[in-house]
Structures are given as structure tokens and as C-alpha cells.
Amino acid sequence: MNGASDWVSTALGIALVLLALADVVHTMWHPSGQGRLSKLLLRLVWRLCQPLGEPGRRACGPVGMMVVVISWAGLVLVGWALIYWPHLPGGFSFDPGTTPADPAFLDALYISAVVLSTLGFGDVVPAGVPIRMVAPLESLIGFALLTAAVSWVLQVYPALTRRRTLSLQLDALRTAKTHEQLGQLSPVTAASLLRAISDGLSGIRVDYTQYVETYYFRDSDRATSLGATLPYAHELALAAKECDSGDLQHSGTVLENSVDELARLIDRQYFRAGGDTATILTRFRRDQADV
Image (cartoon, rainbow, N blue to C red; front, top):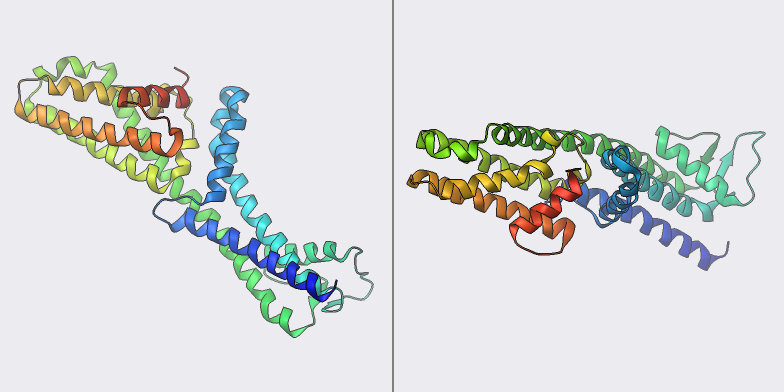
């Protein structure tokens, strides 16, 4: 490689590494909870899974997260390979009996993979001072990626548990035909019940904001699918607003506002189609539940 191509390779490699790291930071620690690359990949996997039937749609969330993590690692691996490439073969020391690859980029990929995955070097060791100074940084990035992937999983599954728990509560209330009995319950008891649902929906709204990827985890069980049970929260709110008790009317209004806000968030992040709350909830049900 000549001087100009060396600089191009190095600059492109740095850009790929920074792209991966920026996406990790936005996905893991940004309040919106999603980088552009992860957002694109998750939506792509979601669309590809739709024709595969229930098993494919149910696997969409885990597969999407795995694709995102692999893409992060791939960008870092190729990026560092491009950084190493201009320094091969002269900038590295090969073990006796090891023949440099032709093209040299294969060696660059090998070195990058070894450093990224093992926090060390294999049978090819950097000899030049510049590479010896920066190569350990790839090991640190590799360890950070592993930590980020594990942390991501540990963040997502509690959010899924909260969503499924609320859905089970709504399903139980629907089975008991609670909307028909609100006026017969103690106003204090009924209002407390509605406030608990409102609080749960507020938590789900936070989860959908910070852990956008949780939307792509689809539940096959109607009782645990928020898409199937959320419309009942709206029905409960409307029923409460028709009651004579002022406490119930107020709690119904609060619950209705919570449902409206969650519906608007879902539409803004995943559909961008507009419409009133009932329309959005119908679209959400069709997208999330086989009902």
C-alpha cells in the first residue's frame, strides 16, 4: 500500500470503530435507548420474521438483539483490521514457520479477531511502536462490547417481565368483567385498582422509551401479550368515566390519559401512521398478537 491508501485505510477503520461505539452508547445509555444502526437492524429483522409464522415472530426479539451485537463486533473487527492493514507485514513479527498471508488484509482480519476476542496476541505480534501502543485498545473495546452485550440482556428482560405482569393483570380483570362491575365496587377500591393500572402503564411507557427493542419481543400467549390486553385498559377507563363517583371518574380520566400517552408513544416509535387511540391500539394488537 502507498501513503495515500494507508491514510484512507486507517481513517476508514477509525470511522467504523467509532460508528460501532456510538451505536453502543446510544443503545445502552442514551435516554431514547436506541442507536441508528440497532434501530435499523431490529426493524429489518422484525420485517423478515413476519412471514415465518408464530415461531419466527416469537424469535424476532432475541434474534434481533443477537444480530445487533454481531454487527457491533463485526464493525470493530473490520475497523481494526483496516487500521492494522497498512502496517503489514513489516510492522508485525510472525512466529517461525508462519507465512504472511497474501493478501495481507487476511492477516489483518486474523490479528484483529485474536486481539478482540482473547485480550492478547496469537502467533503474530506487533513489532512497530505505534501499533504496539494502540493494539491494547482493541482488547479493551472487545471486553467493553462483551460487557455491553451482557448488560443489554440484563436490562431488557426485567422490562419484559414488567410488561407481561401488567398484561396478566389486565387479562384477569377482563376475564372477571371488571368494567361491568366498577359501579358496584367500593369507590375507594375501584379507584385504587385503576390507579395501579395507570402506574403500570406509566412504567411500560418508560420501558418503551429506554428499551425500544422490547417491542420486538412478541408473546404468543394472549394473556401475556400487551397488544391483546391494552385495549381493555382503555375500556376500563371509559367505563369508570361513566360512573357516578367523582373518585372513579377522576381515576378513569387518569387511566385514559395513560393509555392515550402510551398509544401515542407506540405510534411515534413504531408505526408513524397517526390516528386516534382506538385506531392505534387496533394496529398494535394486530402487530403484536394473533387475535
